[in-house]
Length: 357
Image 1 (cartoon, helix red, strand yellow):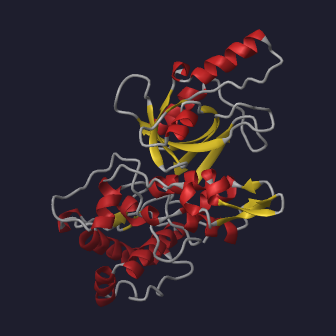
Image 2: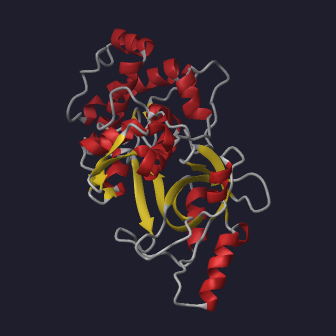
C-alpha cells in the first residue's frame, strides 16, 4: 500500500476514490482484527469477512455502499454514536477518521456522545496527549547503523526516532508497514525502529526521516542549514507557532553542548506539541525523549542564559561560531538535576514540521 493519507470522503455519500476506499478498508480491517465484538458483528452482518480477508487489492467505487455500512457499524458499535448520528462516512481528519487511526492528539476533538465509549476509542476522541517515551529505556534495542564499527542503541542515538514515534501516536496513522493490529496510540519506538529497518530508512549517516515519516502516517518538512533542509523562513518562530496552531507538531533540533560547529547543527531532538495554557516564559509544551518527560519551550531568549553568553561572545569575536536560535528550553521538574541543566541550555537551531496525513 502506497497510500499515506485520506484525500476525500469515503462511504455513504462520499467521493469514494478507489485509493481512499482501500485506505479506509485497511483501517477497518485493523479494528476487525483487534476487536472481537466488532469482528463478530461485521461477520454476522455480511459486511466484511470476520478474518479480514475480504479486502480487495483495488476496491471498486461500487463497493462504497458496503464500506459505508461497515463504517456505520463502526460508529455505532465501537464509537458508541447513537444510530441517528451514524452517517457511514469517513471525512478527512474528522472524528471517525481519528477513531479509525487510533490517534490521541493533538486535541480539539471531544467525545461525541454521553454514552460509554470503549477505552481505546475514548482515547482517540478525547485525549489531547501524546505518548511520551524515554529513549534510555531502550538500551538493548539496536538502531540500523553503526558508529566506529559498533552497533548503537535507541538509548544512545535514538532521540529523533523517539520524537517521530511520539508524534505519530498523536497525529500519525497506521500504514501497511505497521505490525498487524497496532493503532497510532499503541506505536512504540521498538515498532518504529523495526519499520525503519524493514524499509531501508537507515544509512551510515543515521536515520532518514523523509523515508520513515510517511511510513508512520505523517508528512515532514525540515528547515535549517543541513543537507536535507529547506532554508529557514523569515521568521522561524512564527512559522513553527503557526504550524502548531494548525494542528501540527514540531520536531525541534536543539543545541545544548558547550562546543558547537557548522558540522553539527543540533545535539538532540525534542517534540513540541502545543501552545502552553499558562503565562510567563513558558509558551509551548514539549516532550524530551531523554527521560520521556514533559517540559516547556519559550520564544524568549531571556529563558536561556547560554544563548545570551554565546551571543555576547560572538559580538566580541565574530570568528566564533554562533547559530541563531528560535525556541529555548524550560526545564522539567520531573527530570534529573543534570538533565534540567541540559534542558535550560536547549536552543532550537533548526526544526521539522510534522503533519497528519
